[in-house]
Image (cartoon, rainbow, N blue to C red; front, side, top):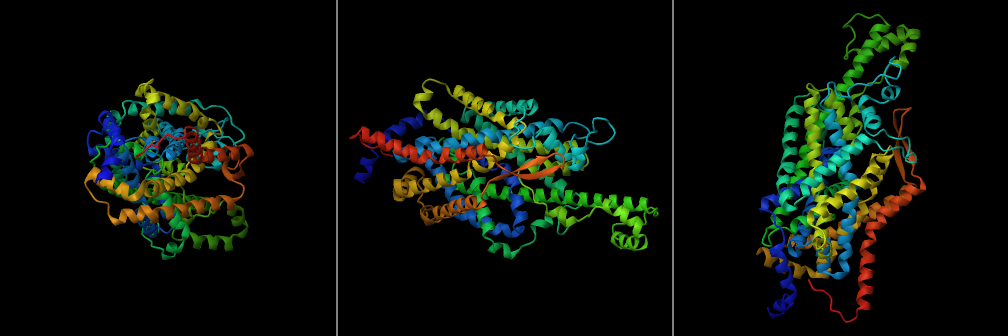
Length: 612
């Protein structure tokens, strides 16, 4: 026991002094709510249902739950344990483990800064839709008239009223990324409001955030339950093969599909918010004796359960929308044929439509050939097969379903209020990942109070985020969403696991946890940390790197107003340069800071290395 006492001698007394002055959560429940509010976000609502639809409904749950056990829970527990043990933000925590690992924390802060810049734009859009939800009728329910008031707007007729409201009224999107266009003042004002709300929530650190998370974590569940009850009563929501029935099929062949496993691992990884430094920041405000192992299990299970629950709700809404569109299409064809061939009202129905079409085509070939180009091909399967994720699901598919519900304004207000709660809850974690290392820094906190640091961070993020309110802003949003975090976070978490297990030492970390919590570390956590989870992350890294290389020229989806649909275009050279800079600016922090620390220590030869 003597060596242990000597190692924790003088250096260990400094954290003890800091612990007394460090803010704490009011109670463990507040910490759990903060983690749930951060982890349960928009991805649970708009990406997980898409993956279920793409990879065989219920069969996708098999790789998803396996990845939760071998990747999600262990890595979540690792980050919470590091934060609680070191009692600092990401930069300080990894510097304590080794001075050469400060770059891991810096990389986390950079990625969180990139995420905050564009993520709050989603909250701005949610505010925009929420404000318009009080109109009767909903502004995305009908196409506007053209300039001459002689018919509907041509772009809206080519697309749909919901797509038109999203691409033209909300984004006022340009035809390509090269056409930057002007600042859209209405979305810009909504962005200012979104950042003001975030600032008020984080103003006093854990004191204010701890109260807000009770609301942001629980409110979405209330709305989802209300939507589930309403969804189950909608026409087509529970039909076999559509709606919730889409979750029932179990396609065994999907279990042999490597992409299903890769997407399951990726969804678990990003849904829990690993690598950003937010979980480390939250855990650093815990009492050292807090049972973070239990909380890691609770948060990861609630997060995954929410994804499944949200999928049931989404599939019921999706089934209603598909059934409604299919039946509307049939009614238009029936009306067209009834008027064209002067049929008796009620004679032509959905059940005999194909039979009557064949009869009319053979009996009146000339007349039928004139009408034929106007007859739409109505298919429930094609309506159900159009898998959508991201903003397309949130602001187009859902709004299309909502506009056809009774009392649509009420359902619209509830839905976008839920999106706001999910988005703001995640933003509290994103900003904590940036602010905690800054407020921990004596050089900064000595000159600026916490409120001023929070205000400057929000102001800087808001100013840069105005780029996303340009006419070409949505294209830049997609670039940040696709490339700002993926590779960087995988590399960050890989280095984190290696640092804890092989730099700090797994046995040493195990003894620290036992001293803190009084609980021994089971073999499951040690096997996952030391072997399985790092190998899984390396596999994901190799997949994404090879995928980027094999893709060739990177492309994006641009809005073509004349066709009323998205078209594929190549990114220009400067956009590719920005993508490269986004990836490099965070990943290169790790080796550059390590190199700088090595050079600095060589110049100050003879100085002892800091000990954790």
